[in-house]
Each structure stands twice: as structure tokens, then as C-alpha cells.
Length: 236
Image 1 (cartoon, helix red, strand yellow):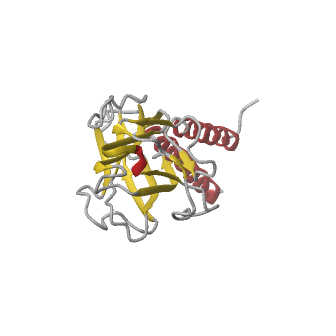
Image 2 (cartoon, helix red, strand yellow):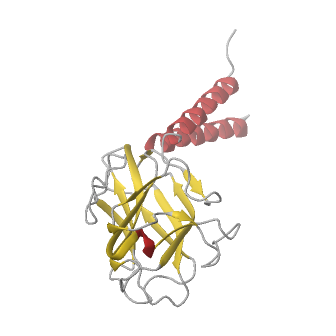
Image 3 (spheres, rainbow, N blue to C red):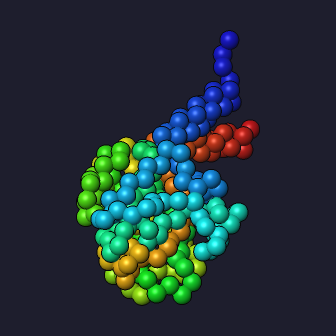
């Protein structure tokens, strides 16, 4: 029995949609509000010198509340990552995912109201993934791509004292890449006895995938077939 034009068209469009969804599923996608503190699978590495008594932790509402949700629903790092006067290098590494050029990271961050101790945060990317950040306060391991720095010069009042949004985009990849993002709380002359470092928080994080080229191709095919169907119906 012959297959009608309309049935064939519907089958082709369903196939296009299915291929489109399959193509975009491999790209990075993540949403995190930190309701339970540091998520499972995220890796903490404290390379501060000398090393202190804390690393990344669930938010403390006595210092400040979260950007949204329960007051403790954020993650923080502070001066106790180092001991005495320290070069703080406190890492929080996200799980390895597949990234494409154009994928975006968005998050909110802040420090303490009226802070007199400058803070700094870096966002770094490793194009091989994993958790290699080296073993010293100055090392970055495979996380050689610096995507973003908040308060790069450790200026007084240079870190936002209210929740502020920051965004950065992955670029320079040769194609789909298994990589990893990392936050690095990095402050020279920090620690309990240092002139720098206080307390920072991160909240409301998302990694948004850009559709892969094959997704656009399949979407275009589906829209083209829809146009053909409408023209056929108009002539009927």
C-alpha cells in the first residue's frame, strides 16, 4: 500500500526532532541552588600555603543569607582556608562534562557587607576534565584557561557586597570536549592574620548548553518540511 505524502512528512519531522534532541543531550547542562551545600561529585582541593582549617562549605546565614531559597542555600569559602598569613588557593571543581563553544556559565556571588579585607575569585576551565590543579598555592594544573576573575587586583570594596550575577562563555574548543569548570578562591596575603581575605558566597548557578550544529540542521529540516506541507495544503 502506498504511503501518503502527509504520513511520510510526519515521519520525517518526528525523526528530525528525535535527532535534534539526541544531539543536544550530549552538551553541558547543569542547574544548582546549593540547597544541600557542596553537591555530591564536586571536588574540593585546598592548596593554600600554609593550609588552614576549612575549605568550601555550606552558607552561614549569620554572615549573610542566600541569593534565593533557604538562608543557608549557598556555598562559601573564607579566610580560614589558610593559616596564619597565607597564600590562599582553595578549589571547587565541578564534574567533567561535554562542552561545546558557546556553552555558558552563570552564577551569583558576593562578600560581606562593608568588608575591609579584599577577596578574589577565579573561574577556570580544563579542556581535559578531571581534578588536576597541581599541589601548590600557585599551581593550576590542567585548569589553564582563565574564564573570569572577580576583583583581580584585590581592591578594597572591589568584590560585590550584595549578590551580583556573573556570566562567562566557553570558547576556543576544536569541537565537543570533555572538560571541567572550577572555582578558585585565590588570595595572597590572606588567612586569619593576613591583610586580605574575608568570606565569599556562590549561589544560583547554571551551565547552559548551546545547541550543537546538528541540532540546527535537524531543526531547519523540520521547519522546511513544515513549509512544504503548508504550501501543499494552500494549493489543495
